[in-house]
Image (cartoon, rainbow, N blue to C red; front, side, top):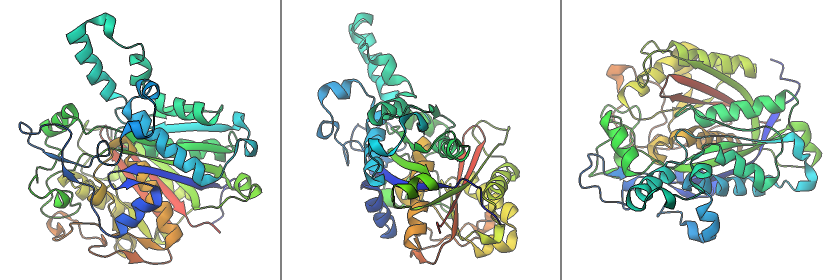
Length: 420
């Protein structure tokens, strides 16, 4: 099939995750089967049913190592880690201010919840010290759009600047919107991705109350087990991942390295339950079909699916069904699938972003990581695809896709294609 006249490519990647900092280092750790899930250390979990998470703060990130006290006061932790990932991605891209028109450069990122730490801290100040002691930075720090705004300020990006928020599909929507801004001719460069910091007592309590989280507290690294018969919920994670997208023409003109093409974007909604996916699988399947159509890719051309793969009972069943509906039973059985959340946990609004980074590096390196902890595939509930158990899979991957299914029924699929 023919390609779109204006190709969009990835030229820079950055990440700060429960497996550490550095996008390429994180990918290597995924290939090695390492897990970022551990017992929570930042607060006392005695009263909580879930005592595990995949943390960044206090494990791989101390704000004082990167920011002055003044800078820390002016940014919520989710913005802090998002900006660090953006700095890595921008460095990796090799872009200099002389190489792009600032009015044709944008900042489009996603988050599910945003500046919640500032809200939690602000409420304590209000109750203990009164309204006059609430910081003037409270509003700017709680604004979810502070993430793309701070990134735009840092790099002088004067084009489209906004935030997408659609729960676990947030940064998938951001990447799709960024691709469209470039493909349409409005932009040459867009910084995109997402950040999230939800490993706090309130968020853990909230997700626990809807029975979404694993309680495998005695064996943290085995708690996230997508598509496995014995899964009991997802593992809350925090982190950030950022990508620099450019038109291929712009990237080639400055001699940039190219990881891959962002080839397609599809989005739908279940319009059903606010947290549970529609059991028919029809709407996530349609998002996948729309993404393939947008990329001008046939179902049988898909080599690998980086699954949403949360390790919840319903999600893994419905996503597997959706893949079969979209690709066809035969093509689905020939396509390999794996879940990054099996080792990273669930980064909520930043999940799509880190999984997009994984897709780009899968194409570049010709290897896909395994799904950790997959010991007994849940065949009884239809989880019967090739989920790459145990060992990474080497192959000349040409087309890979990433699925994201968010609370609210939001379904996003992104298609990535090997460049050249």
